[in-house]
Image (cartoon, rainbow, N blue to C red; front, top):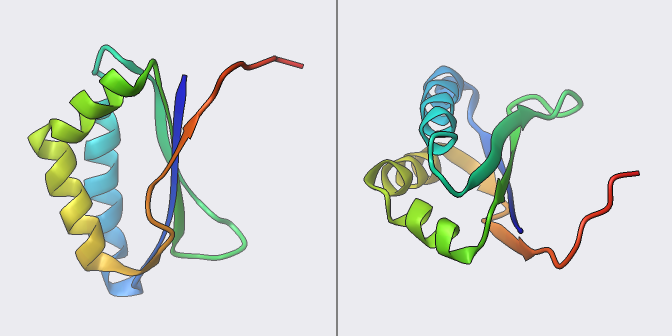
Length: 99
């Protein structure tokens, strides 16, 4: 499984546009065959700081996702709205245990 994370701080003036774009992106991503889960959350202790957490079947699914027009367009839009960003972190998970 592949886990993708990323944190972005959005300027207050771009908040509504960011939430609309991110919601649209997540909705489309969830329809992809290789998507296990995809979400974004706001850090309640740091307003306008959003964290994306995605789980994908494998790297082939990630490559397919990144090749989608909507994925590239959303990433470009978020870069323009971001005050700061951690970038995209890709984690290759060998095993998972539910405790």
